[in-house]
Length: 156
Image (cartoon, rainbow, N blue to C red; front, side, top):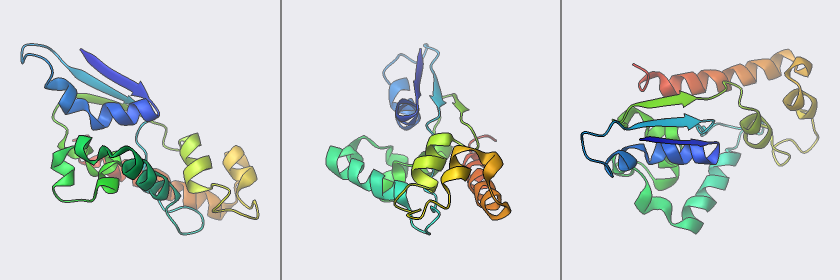
């Protein structure tokens, strides 16, 4: 059995992988695929955490705390556990992650959303990385490193 999803579905497949595994007899081969679901709790271009604010609303509105991995909620707040980087290392079911290091949605909507870039300094860069300044490239490289670090314990 394979549990997979893309973007928000990729996030769900990561968060519910072990729960999905438990629905089957132990003799069943179960694997999960998280495609573009490795959303990061990253600092945006204004120094805030835009995606965290969005996810706090989702967690609160939908009451998802009870559906998050207990291996995470037993030591972190529910919003932190909605970010796979905080729970992925504890997943026991075989999982394959497919995620761009410079995920276009995260760059546009999480790292440089209009609310964090009111003067549009990041507009050209976030639409075409060839138009980024050296400091913008360095910021994006920091995001990439954050992603690689978040899966380091998982990928061993």
